[in-house]
Length: 158
Ligand SMILES: O=C(O)C[C@@H](Cc1ccccc1)C(=O)SCC(=O)c1ccccc1
Ligand SMILES: [Zn+2]
Image 1: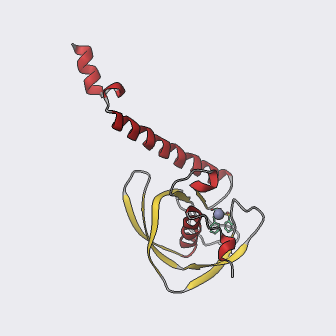
Image 2: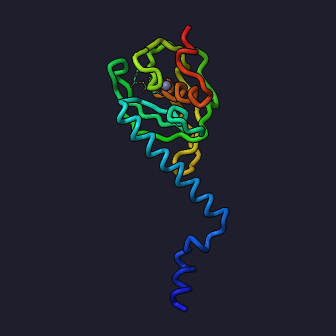
Image 3: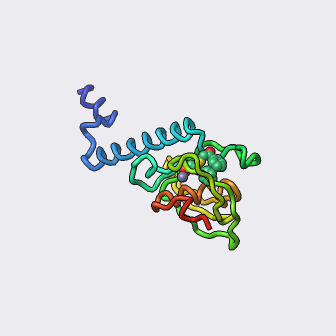
């Protein structure tokens, strides 16, 4: 009897419903993808990366701002996964700034972006986040959001 009780208490995978099992597999897939993207953006010395750039069709990207030659005052931040991201509001003026792209190596260009964006996304723990992003971090967010819609920075250069 103890054995059966132990199995029930531990929630043995075999006792989960099929829907719970599928949900757990999907959740693990997203967590693995987030970990892979964070490792990839670090190895590539990037400041962001979007799932479509590694042929994963889901609305998920990483923002990983750090100071660099073109943006020496960029904040250093923990690489942050942003799931189902959206812009809720933005400043009127667009400011041009240098961008590159891990999918278009060797090319840099001046791209207009909103300087301030109010954004919403779910973090990797499923918690809904609302934030105001400014300057370089706002630029990265807009660059990565474009990737989710098949747009690259070359498409926005004037
Ligand atoms: O292709 C990507 O999404 C990564 C891209 C993100 C990005 C760079 C610059 C502005 C907005 C978004 C890169 O990280 S490109 C390589 C890079 O580290 C870099 C390039 C230009 C300026 C700063 C950083
Ligand atoms: Zn890019």
